[in-house]
Length: 176
Image (cartoon, rainbow, N blue to C red; front, top):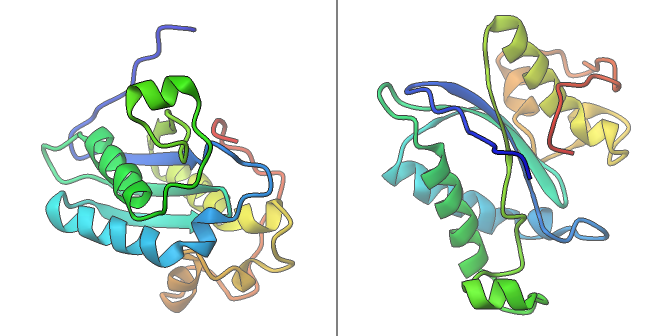
């Protein structure tokens, strides 16, 4: 495995992709959407961050966060979100011997994809990617029809029209 280094920029804006361990035929994130929302809300109260855009799909999610000035610890936030969500679920998942030995649940992939947003164009491409993702994966015929997305807030703010759609072939790299 390559020597992977994460970028930590205090007050930075980041794009993330976070996946469940079992991605095939798994709708855990939307079936337990309230637990996920409550967990994120609780972590944000303790360790603030701005949610710029977010979409939750059945087995993965994408989001953009901006951290407070002087703070670059998104890893702590993700660890607490993932563990808090997992603790709220009954222990029914199959766990490998490695995960049992490490005291880990078999809910999430261990790692996640992060990308530092570099400029306004990079930001807009990632926001578009997040919002078109349910359409890209065939969950809906129109972006507005997916309920687990900040797209609705963007429409309410006049940033997107309700019938917005961009090229579903949009690619920003990583994560899926």
